[in-house]
View 1: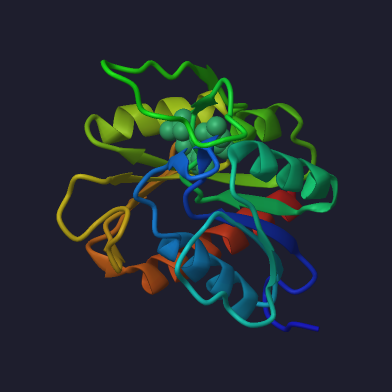
View 2: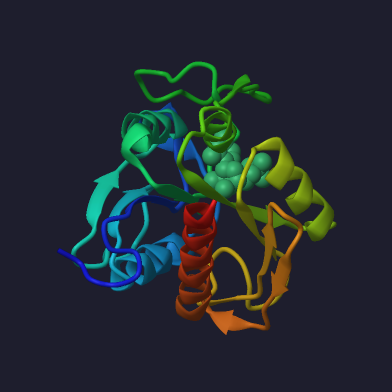
Length: 223
Ligand code: C5P
């Protein structure tokens, strides 16, 4: 049994990219490394939580004493998250989820032909939005990776997805975002509070996030 301020809390963390298959040898994905999500899983475990890490393909060793569930596609992530949601006390959605997937996945390798090719894409479910709609006791923390107007987009997502907090960062900034070991983030809380941090290692950002979650639980328990 883990010890610490998050003892007894069941927390789901999603991390990494997703892969959306075109055929057996090709996929659509993004540059997410999973570093932020893995660091969060570790920080929450260190503060006593029971952590389940739902991870897309990442070249990282998962932290000890964390249950790890590997997925590839957004639909697989959706299944694994939804299944565990009713028993979760909090969800931290740091995965870079693909908004679209190819309408058809070919069973066999697609052969080249002369001229251009068109792949029809359909929308994936917005997992976090659905969690927000079904929210009961859970605290929800989302991420907003943006390339411009970070604060505006982040605040809109906080509201649209019914979150308790959103972590915003500009992924075009040097030393921040997808592959980096460091990040420069702002936390936007539901009740209007914001906290901006300087450039920090992802491990330190993860510790701040864990502290933020502890204060959100405390606030919840006072009401
Ligand atoms: O709307 P946007 O994708 O920018 O929001 C980002 C947040 O929503 C992240 O926390 C991400 O994990 C989550 N998300 C999701 N399902 C999607 C798209 C994003 O859970 N299909």
